[in-house]
Image 1: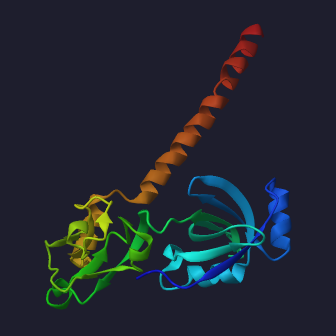
Image 2: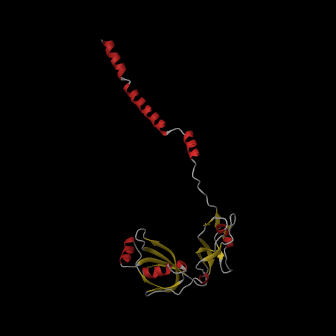
Image 3: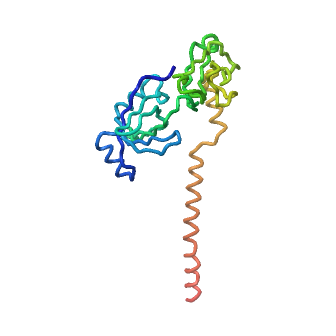
Length: 241
């Protein structure tokens, strides 16, 4: 089960401009918004240490926790979106969603590959994971921390698809069930060219200095064309004499 006993304390804040959010951050908190369950969205501030504890837990952002709002509501909630500052890596903003424990949720769950593929062990291939997460629908109490898939049977030409992922009746896959998750690809060996091949290739391609020489001749020709008008002027002077 993905649910963990977590409590997130929140304080109401005035929703407004970016300056208001900056003031919250300067105070050591994270600006956040709580919405969902047909209720009005509420602007709150959170303790970054509590948020980090949830995001780094086994169930990560799919963790269902108790949100306690000072002087306000108590509700089950989960983190649905978050933003990091690109340089320092600190949390900038959090989106929280109220959760009704008797209503199904749509969540993204990581896929974890288990075992050693036969195509890697016996054929010298490489296991390539094409899909890292799968979207599912289930009740909040049934959200798995991850979905483990055995890849030991994979050889060249065999593809593990979403439909092959293990699950029970409590989970419903929303991702395309035909979408590939993993397969074994061959290793392409790079062969160093022989001296004979290098010589043959060099003979087939014109040497670069000749191209440069042509370019210089064209430039000299252009300069000569610009100087040409001087000769007719001298001829005119001789006629006048």
